Image (cartoon, rainbow, N blue to C red; front, side):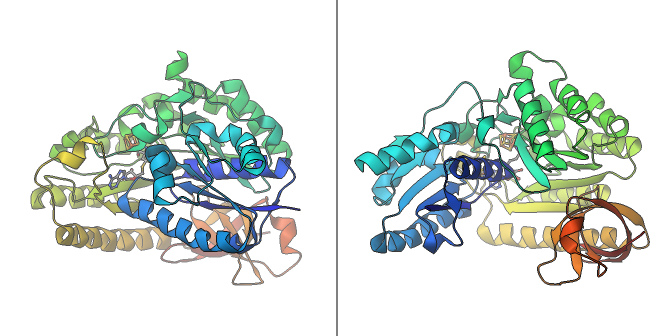
Length: 439
Ligand code: SAH
Ligand code: SF4
Ligand code: F3S
């Protein structure tokens, strides 16, 4: 039997696309390869959000080239770098067989056939004006499934390449999303993570008002699904109605990823984010009022053009005010074709590095402190698997999405996967919690 290997870079949209491609390939009768070296089909799902992500792709593809010298392997590159570079990729790496964009995934079987039958290269990076997934192939064996509810982005934040590589916002049909989730529930999925670059605007392109909240209400009625999460929310579109949903919908977990990007109004305006730090702080207050347990995480860019010491201090100040549960911080990386890539007053690499380290050190302290505050509490943990490092530990997540290792030496660990159990937290560590099962 032929086998496949998928290497994935980038965001959860890409992870979801890779899971989908895997289910397409499984439905065609291929099996998952143990390693890239053993695979007959190798796909690389790429990301171009920052310079580093792009470089990783070329280095991976270069390694596959050596495998191709020894065996007959089909190499496909998809995702955002494929969309952005198109034919250029073939000039840089002529041993690639297929280059296809995020809107072309449904055609994967056709591409593979073409390469097999004719030996010709395939380049397919066009846009589609609908967003459909073939539900006939859906197969996710895990406890949590990533469900894209829309593609693309209309926001054009001045630093960001996503609107150029993923196109404008296209929402999936609501019934198709619900059908997919129902089927996943039947397959044993307990938790869904609804995905989009800005889920808050789900349905606007289909003329729906409050489409996202209404979708959440419908998902929460699906019995097999016990937990619902979503990402990402753009702060400008976080409505009171959505905030209220956290107290109304029991299955909606108390965690929101709310990227702030900067704490300085000057920089937020240059970034075209369309909210001020004051408005952001107000939404955080409202979230915590409605749901005191709410875990809030964020993304930050340091060293955006024009960011001076005062702007950076504003970001630190915002960190201290919000006290995020965790944060991803990045050095600004100029992306081709974006507005920010030609802005003046660029910040030097050294200053970017220093600012990144300052923020990361501060965040580590806050994350650790927040994890420590969990000690002694009893929390419902959805068990996702076994701890690979210990034979007597299960791994799961709390409602607020903290990874939790649970001591368990009484029976078969596999029987516990997919169950929600009560866990007494004994230790808050730097990036996770530890505890034991309460009967
Ligand atoms: N749609 C999401 C973000 C997707 S990209 C949102 O609006 O929040 C994930 C993160 O990458 C962004 O939140 C941002 O912090 C970071 N990012 C995007 N473009 C970047 C760039 N050019 N340089 C550095 N970081 C960037
Ligand atoms: Fe990029 Fe902004 Fe769209 Fe997020 S909202 S994907 S940061 S343009
Ligand atoms: Fe990267 Fe594309 Fe996602 S650029 S972050 S994989 S939308």
